[in-house]
Image: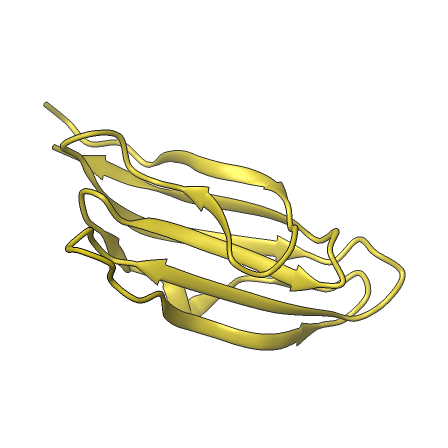
Amino acid sequence: MANFTKSLADGVTAAVGTNVYAPPALTKALIRQMTVCNITTGVVALTVGIVTKSAGAPPVRVIINARNVAVNETYLCPEILNAVVDVGGHIEIGSAPIGATFVISGVEMT
């Protein structure tokens, strides 16, 4: 079966530590692109973390820690490029204040 890049998640940032994407059962994901756009009226501090796989209670691996995204800036998040989220893992995104938009694209593989 061919693996094609597709949209994995999109939305508006909420509080830091909000789970925004988890691969389906028995599937892992390779992140190809993540874009965040600050459409708010002030600077937002963006935090992104990955729990790579489930094994008891794995810690969140912070990939981007409180990075300031200016008003009307679009940030391409190179830190998360080619990250793998294994079965049982997930991506967490948040910002303070809330309200930036994001899109995550990648490939799901069984």
